[in-house]
Length: 83
Figure 1 (tube, rainbow, N blue to C red):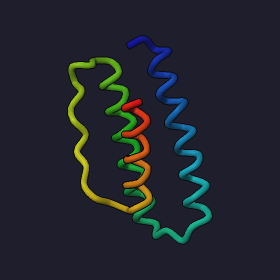
Figure 2 (tube, rainbow, N blue to C red):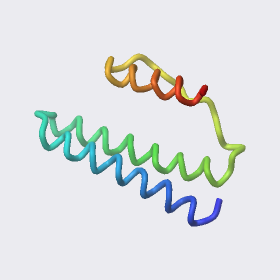
Figure 3 (cartoon, rainbow, N blue to C red):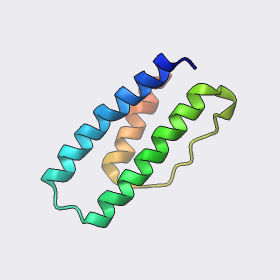
């Protein structure tokens, strides 16, 4: 993938992280949870760049039940992708 694609992915992640950062600031989240979230998001960003560079690296996304709000968001995304 061209650099422009990587830049677009990075801009999108920065927007997401900005929103998450504001939410963490406003919520009473334990520090170790915030650090774990940051590490997971960093790995997700790196994986998105790898997959964008080489579509053969795509693998099914594993999914385990989590917070109901996130489960609902995942379902909404699935529905919109199917359209």
